[in-house]
Length: 123
Length: 410
Image (cartoon, rainbow over all chains, first blue to last red; front, side):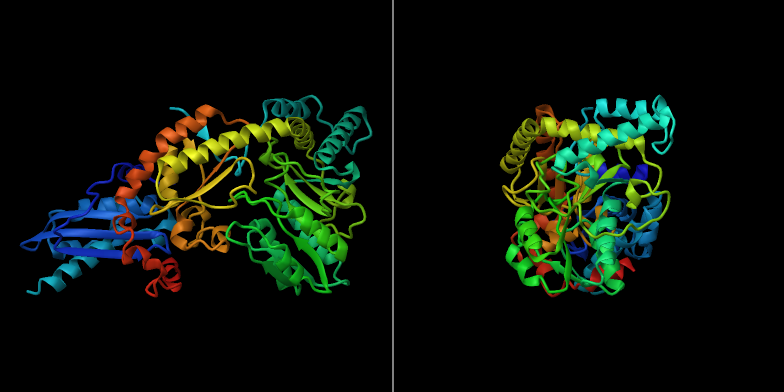
């Protein structure tokens, strides 16, 4: 049901954890739906220097979280904002159709973290 | 890698002797029981013997046993067959909130056809209250359907009490006993059961064969017409290999029952105790004592069921969960919700169901692997990171609206 890439990111998730001194934090989903994704960002000169995640959720939720951290690390905030949930799913060689709706929120979590950063660091 | 199968409530391994007999009745003794010749007569004889074996397992007469394709079909015939045949007596049906979909869906279908439906609530352990049932009975109640033991949490219902009440009031009583037959003693006469559903593959017979017990004298209508097999209750050429397999599995189960229950229960108790001792913050779901001998159902707080199942699977362990991701919908198990679990706890449920095929080594292996898997998933969980704080209770707050999942799912 899951692609090899999904299972790889699920079994060996990248960038798991918390950044204590994060510049921006974003959280999407809720426990009722069975998915919560939390993204921590460290930003320097408009570039995402470090990123970590914590996820409560199914295989797809964990894999997309892991994948999005790889996709945005080193990117400018502008570029990171352009990454969509669909692009994350595509980078994992796709998700089962039912998961596209409920567990594919990782890019939203990054966007929420960036918005948090911008709110805390007005230009 | 070691493989451990803890999903026997989903299906069991077919018993080797049963499988050999099934093969025999597909190859050498392959006649149609409806035929006059020797091939047919031999098949007929085998079906008759199987009917007696199945009847004996639940204390019925062989003439009260009808072979079907399994649990779903037996449930449908029971509910719709009794409802249609007794329409003139009343239109009220009572069932419970924790029934299998094979009962709830036909009940909902009957409701659309004009029948009245009362769905009884359950307590925190998943038990129906006899008092609540009594209060729900109306003069036009024609049928009560309450399962013998729940497939998810293993909770056993007060079947004999319900049977006594139903019999006293002249109401038919059906029980979906799919999880209990072959795994727990059943006596349909002593328990005043009028109709009972069973499925072969839950007690080491093949898939695709089951039976329906209908007490002599119950007014019921068949749902399909055809060649008149199974005394018109379930027409269609008999699944002879399946029927013979079911009969043999029934006979073996009856012979093994006391010893089997004792052995499985000891394994289960050790498994549950090991989980509770080695992993903090585990909630037992279901009744502490009134539960099927092979059932463990726990919620692993702060983690989600599907990711738990995938991690167990990577270690060769087969289990199941009531999380939304495994129920095929956006909501977790209706059984766990009916028992009052909040969504997050239901999403983290884990069912381990044992059978006679499981061993002490299986339990040891599971207990050796499980704590590390839970620790790893918890270390990734934002719920665990913020446990005890307001944030961890976020789902109970107003910010978690019922509609949120719906929007995301649409």
